[in-house]
Image (cartoon, rainbow, N blue to C red; front, side, top):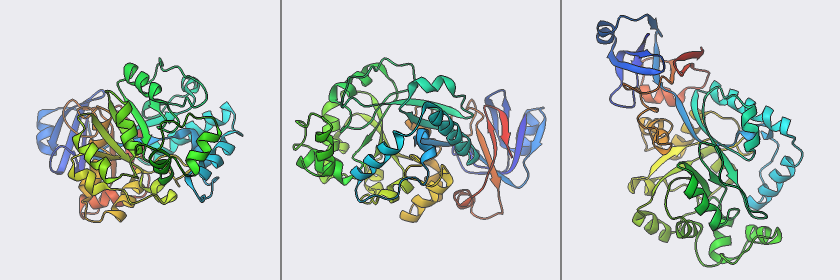
Length: 381
């Protein structure tokens, strides 16, 4: 089949006016000008008209477990108060509630043009009951504050929750068995106070529930993390609270890592300004996620891109789009298969209306339900 569009944004070169993509099954076999692709391929032609065709969007961090908590938790005075509030809400939920929540989240993410998602779940046993409509990387979220957990798990990757809830031993065991790894890191001011100063609401809360606090009072969260991990390629989520010494450590590190920023969740918690320019200057791979609906309004990556643009007006719309396509694919080690429209890549595509303006600005500004193709099959219009 050949798809023709007014513009094809490949994220692998300049946009192609009057472009086309030919594919067979779930594999792209040709990309270029429509006349050239048609001359090289004798397949059926589907004309998408005055649309921009682009790679499907990739959500690099989400918690679909909590889709049902949209609007349930008002902004709290502290991050620790929010933890208490979400724990209270979770205590009311049954396994059936979580299954419904996850399915609702998948449907919403897909409706907003997401074709691949990195989803953290606290309930590995529920995965068998879910049939995702989009490509999904499952990351069991692991916590061993009160009890040791099994990390020999059949999932896409592993997610020790955060340094304040996962032990050094848990992090190291995860590195031994998983190729894909993600964790929350340096998310809040209270996490910084806990590790650096052995003080603050989070320190008091974790001590209250029985955590061994002997690793506190010496290092920042980032220093603590890099002191305990030995290997692996990590997706580090948030990095909102970064000391000057942390930047020195990140610059010197030989470990491979990506950073996932969740702009609207960041605003919900009123975290310190995200240090994108510093990370960008260090050539860190920064991508975007939505986090959960316990701290966000919806699962639209278009809205996340606009929120990011609102904070970093000097960053081009093309670079922002890369954070939900090529850079997110790189974080998931899929840079040759997803996030770009190129030969041999998967046929995960999105198309939106185009009025003839700046193509990347129009993509960022899109607010609706796009035409979609996942795994070589049309899934919406």
